[in-house]
Image 1 (cartoon, one colour):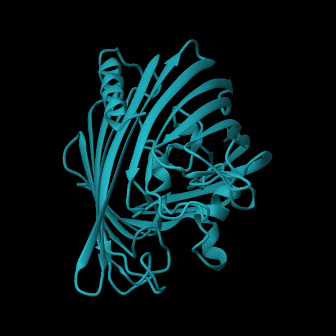
Image 2: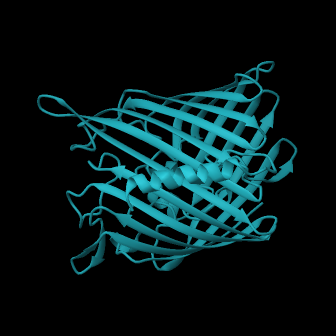
Length: 381
């Protein structure tokens, strides 16, 4: 599907969603802050389990889905993410420890070493100003980038779009957060870099998040990132990398209402050092999702997306497809069943369309298309 057709459909999604009445309080699905828990004095303890079974038509490396870290095991039943959530708050201090396990952790934290590879979050915070509600938090933090997090229960579809798979799911550093008004919140980040707990170079990175909640049913979020991304490995994705600039904008509409929707667009610029000059690569994406709730128990979701990375600045192609840019869209449908107040069952089908042969079908065969069928069960307390 052509990019301009996808963009037109995204605009249509936005228009349909904005014309419907809302019910419920909007939350930010990019941040895993909606997990519940049992309260024990000043400590809250929660848990989350996400199981899945999927079939992807294209072949991946070692039975893994190409281009995804979420639900990325193919043709088997497995655990995407199992985590415990410990939150502590007393006086002007707060802390959160969230260890995680599963195929998402194995794939997404492959660059981290030792016990750091099991930390979804691990941070402490201090309220600098009680009157102005200004907090500073430091440690391993959740990322605000794109409109999806690692917690699938907060999303309109079960599988992740390509958007969150190619921005940080987690950050390491310090975060200063403050309300600018009753409806606007600002967060500023001082970071080790782009999704890295251990700093890969001596240069800090910076980020920002601006949340605007015009009412209880809409959320607009704007994020930025910039920093030197050179790393201690040779090659174009290592020491040759220089400054990276990134910005995203997403809108969340009535996530608990009869009609819910979300739209996300973002773009990035990556500079590379060459012998006599600086080379620049640009990537961008757009996605939109719409859900219709038939009843309290049943709903149907649909998503369209397009990801444009012609120079492979951010998406590495699988080894069988060297020298091909990533210009890919997908369309999907997801049937959602709410089994109880704390359990979901979902069945999803998704079709991918690319302008290049980026999928391998085995035996040297290549394809521009791929299909993904997946079911997921999530439970939490």
